[in-house]
Amino acid sequence: MPAYLDHAATAPLCGPALAAITAELTRYGNPSALHGAGRRARMVVETARDEIAAAAGADPSEVVLTGGGTEADNLAVKGLYWARRAADPRRRRILTSTVEHHAVSDTVEWLTATQGAEAVWLPVDERGILDLDALDAALAEDPASVALVTVMWANNEVGAVQPVAEIVRRAERYGVPVHADAVQAFGAVPVDFAASGLAAASISGHKIGGPLGIGALLLGRSVAVTPVLHGGGQERDVRSGTLDAPAVAGFAAAATAVVGDLPAESARIAGLRDALVAGVLERVPAAVLRGPASGPERLPGNAHFTFTGCEGDSLLFLLDAAGVQSSAGSACSAGVPRASHVLLALGLDEATARGGQRFSLGHTSTEDDVRLLLDELPGAVAKAAAAGMAGHVPDLRAAGR
Image (cartoon, rainbow, N blue to C red; front, side, top):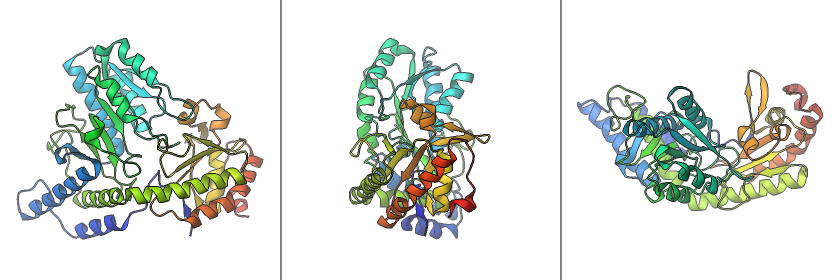
């Protein structure tokens, strides 16, 4: 069996989610319809909403169901910006970090290019943790011009967990709402929306063992957002569209399961992660762990390394041929490798950043997965280093030898 070490990209469907989805697939009914089938579907959705709310520390009325984390991020950032600016045209500035997921950073860039927004990109330290002094300075510079702060709860590449409560506390001094992309955090670390003080937070089903194509925006009851989608007025009239009852049920089942098992499971996964990190550093001495050290500032299932002289995509394909599935720390555009913006924000140079590789563990991960990686990694690194930084994908027929 391959070692699946890419849970941060998507997690395998968990048993409770599969059971919930399967039970609903043979049923029908539009949750907005008034007849019996519709009322039954509505009951499924509202029961699931209650369960998602309980898992995330929110009130059920604060759970706005969406088509995933990307849609939730777009609704939060665009919706808050439009609503805040409509109330006061001076509110043009969006404060965000240099390590955001593209669902946030590209949205901010679009608002800047087309909607009159001004982006303020806040730096992070070498671990990926937000510079709070820079946040303070940006807020204090002209508080009346700030539309919102949007900072991810936990980073998808290097696993850095941000001090969300402190970020909210500092923004609250000026009456500025904060949105957090909590897609990576939810189900990995405790997420309590009510306690956080956030105005909005994005979560996703498929990162926690739920189905693809379903997520939610946790949105404070008094927080105004302008809708991105218009139509039937579902979900508090901020997210129109017929709800996918089987997917919603699967999301709720996964959320209930992952949060119920969180203390024990996060400790188990962190133990595997620590063994993986120690083994990689022992077997490949040139490897460098990126992000925070093991502890509360790092997601329990995240291990991200750079391998000097290796192209991340080449190493990915070599490991894949050996039965280890991971993720390169770079994105590829039009066939041309480029460095991860996250690693560059941590202060790495272009060549070093192009050698990134992320190993992320989750509910299916085992000691055998870690063992297979450690057995195959030294040889894969040697082959990738021999290929150099040419930016080509290695011959997979040779990679398996």
